[in-house]
Length: 481
Image 1 (cartoon, helix red, strand yellow):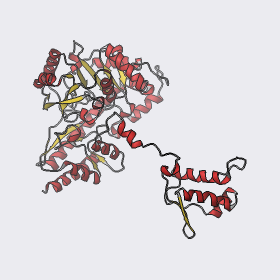
Image 2 (cartoon, helix red, strand yellow):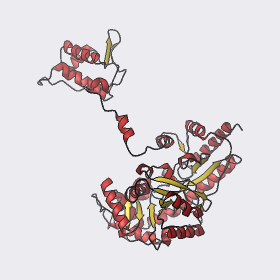
Image 3 (cartoon, one colour):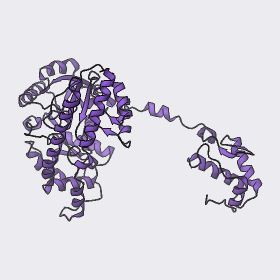
Image 4 (tube, one colour):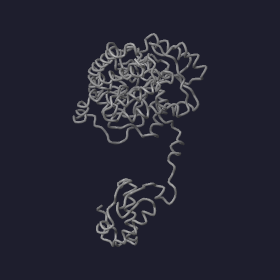
């Protein structure tokens, strides 16, 4: 209300006042129902005749924005753009529906919104709890001096060379041979999948994925008109005996797999199954996307070597990330692939975001170069194992007779099969109303509607205990037992 009309302007004073009030309404500062100051008060405030204010208010009443009477004063009754514009505003809903990128499933949209509500216990969230993130060590990295000063400018198309050199050395420990030239830095493994879908696959092609799979919960491939074909799994991973038949039947272009601590099932592909998978895909000439973001989160013994470590024919596109181990906020992942593939993906990445954050890349390289990352992993594995054991104990205590599960050897997830008759959509809604956020199995495949993905990585131990007990009570109510 510090605004004053411009007495030197050629625009009449009543018009200036009218436009100012209109702006207050359209910006939401004076919302519908707001009682505006009296004519006398406005005239004194703007140092104009009362008749000038009356004229301005009459125009706004005529436009349907204000309503006035002698007893109740003048109030805002409408803020519609249709009343303010000379021509009708654009129909943004039609623009939204015309976009080619698929929207999230409604349940995922609900989950994304609910994750940021206060007081929600998130039993399915696939990220590390705040108290598991190395915030203090990260502060010390930025506060301390380093011979490798970071840049505030853009990085080269493939990413920061310092980081790529550190990654090449680090991946040797996983048995993966890589040089900086065949590593691309991406903003998390999800961006890697998006680049692959845009840069390597023709529209209308098919890819084989595990059933269920994390890939069903995102639309990076479907939005490029690429079909996902589900391959059944068992305790050892994808059933390799079906690959040849499915490849031929669906003319599949590649296979996507999470062989180590699978999302959402937590399954660990055995050594024998990995060898068989590589043998079949080599014979079929079927490229593989290996998503290995959970590789370092083992509890008792390291997992078998990645598929990429047994890849003399450059069949595997290898994806990794720091999001599940160090910091989801860094948004740093990588792709290891033949140089022509990396060059192609790097070109597309430059067209989409002109490179991942240079500061994040520098920080990730410092974690590797100083040996801090390996130290952090030792502590993180211990903490996650404790949470897994607690969650298994809670399942045994509260869910025996209502659910079945396997104990994972690492990663974030327990894939819980609900064995009593319950409408899962009702369970999701009731749980959310009670302050518990779930990840139902339908997110990961339509045929796994009687499953829940339970994560022990995000909720704190006391939240896990409360949330699992409340969830069990809800299930008993819905099952009528």
